[in-house]
Every structure is written in C-alpha cells, then in structure tokens.
Length: 136
Figure 1: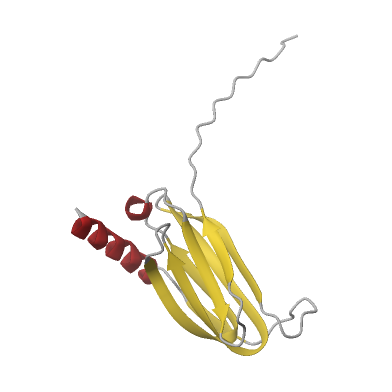
Figure 2 (figure 1 turned 30 degrees about the vertical axis):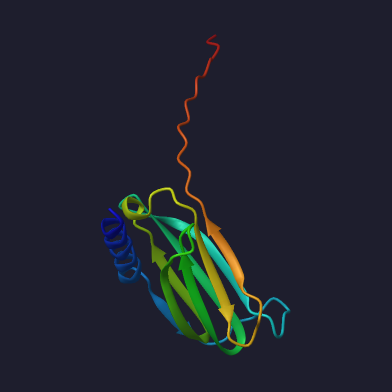
C-alpha cells in the first residue's frame, strides 16, 4: 500500500512538472523595494478540473531561488532551482493523486536566510440557494 502511495505521488509530481512553465524576462519595477524580492503565489484557474497555480518571482537584480513543494507529512513532491529577475512558473496539480491534502510551497532566495511559505488547501463546497420572488 505504501509503495502504491509513493507511485501515485510520483505520478502527481510528473504531471506537476509537465505543466510547469518558466519564463525569464527583463527586470520590472519592484514596488519600491530595492533588495527584497516580490513573491506571489495565486490560483489562476483550472484545466480539466485540475487547479492551476502561478508563482511569480520579481527582483531588480538576477537572483537564484529554490522552490519546494511538500505534502502535509513533509515529503518533498517537487523541488527546483531557478535564476532570473522576472520568473513566472505555472503548476497544474493532479487532484486525483494529491486529493484534499494540504500542500506547502516554500520559496527561498539564495541570498536570503528566510523562506516564504504558502499553503494550498483545497475545499469543495456544495452551495444550494433558494430564491423567493414576488410577482406583480
């Protein structure tokens, strides 16, 4: 059973890698912060009912970042080093493999000792709405 779980995590990571994209471009404005990178992780939509996330890293000077994705037990599902001034990386998560587990995304600049950590927590809600409308 444990081997089967490990294989399914590998499949999830493989899908994760296939749909990740890295773009490097020229430096952009850094919202008044000279030395600190601007890091942003956001949900940008879905593809085939699978969530897509975008990680944006922007710095005024070229910098190296380490990106690590872990599950709730601390197992590393994905890790990569990227270098640049304006980096965008998109991730497609396989919900069939990951399920509703809480994931964490850690982004650490090589020059900085403190990492930024984001959590991804999927929730499914069923919303039922009943409306009463008065007719003339």
